[in-house]
Amino acid sequence: MLDGRVVIVTGGGRGIGRAHCLELAAHGAMVVVNDLGVGVRGESADDAAQSPADAVVAEIEAIGGVAVSDTGSVADWAAVAAMVQRTIERFGRLDAVVNNAGILRDATITSMTEQDWDAVLAVHLKGTFALTKHACDYWRAQYKAGQPVSGRIVNTTSGAGLVGNFGQAAYAASKAGIANLTRTTAMEGARYGVTANCIAPIAATRMTAGTGHAQSGGGDGLDPFDPANSSPVVAWLCSEQSGWLTGQVLRIDGNTVHPVDTWTVRPGYTAAGGGRLSATEIDAALRVVMGVAPAGLAALRVR
Ligand SMILES: NC(=O)c1ccc[n+]([C@@H]2O[C@H](COP(=O)([O-])OP(=O)(O)OC[C@H]3O[C@@H](n4cnc5c(N)ncnc54)[C@H](O)[C@@H]3O)[C@@H](O)[C@H]2O)c1
Image 1 (cartoon, rainbow, N blue to C red):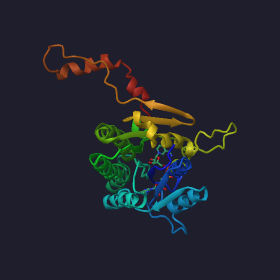
Image 2 (spheres, helix red, strand yellow):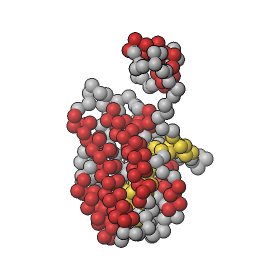
Image 3 (cartoon, rainbow, N blue to C red):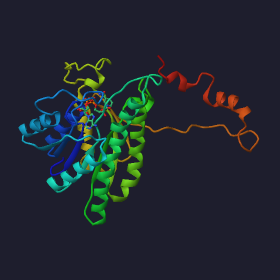
Image 4 (tube, rainbow, N blue to C red):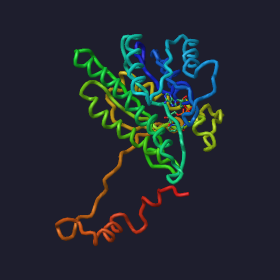
């Protein structure tokens, strides 16, 4: 499915990203395994003999695949530009990017520090945009030069980004931003041969340790929290075949892939007087429109 295609995967050294790299390589892609090799909060990890990115490159080479490692941070604009440049110099092309790198700094709003907020947004939201921007610059230039382009961007959101989550203001805001960045990228990229889609995976990784997402080894052959469960969808999204789908969020839950709807504008209330809405009519109007026990409140997870 991916013979001859070149794909960059960020955060490809561990967890879900590692599984994507192995799946992509198994389908014939040449893979740039990017990973900064940090702890789950983005802190410096212990000096390991081999970086996570190098370890995944070795795994891919062991199955006869082609891969190179990159140990820059996705939050570093210049490092991401250099990674794209090196990829094109090394392989002569770039076909897809998978924005997967991530960290967590969970804290309630009252406990959140400015540093934690900035760190989470830098890796997830700025990091996703940085690789999107540098890859799109390349694809647009190729298109303008008359070259065929089938650029693919695969972003990573999460349940927190789609519906919010207690204690994850920065993470949820980043992931919601990524979902909406995906739609905007899809609108712009369509002009020069680029699609952008987003996955919302669920997996047992160090990021979800303690949340009840435990890998079970699945007696029926399916482990609902295997980090590799979303990788087949990512492989397809990186292929030429997926060119008809763009601007979508796909949730992968075990062995089921669900399209996710965007925010929906529901039937509303129009000002009684014909002019602007009056503040005095809003309370009664919204009680009617939303119902006395608003469905939205029932869905909120409050702890
Ligand atoms: N695990 C889940 O259930 C779940 C659910 C929804 C979304 N996600 C998302 O999936 C992605 C992968 O998560 P995971 O569970 O595999 O976590 P993980 O911690 O196992 O892997 C994340 C990897 O990203 C790397 N990384 C962190 N900061 C980086 C940076 N600045 N530059 C480059 N690499 C960096 C880390 O070194 C690590 O190897 C994340 O974006 C996460 O938010 C995970």
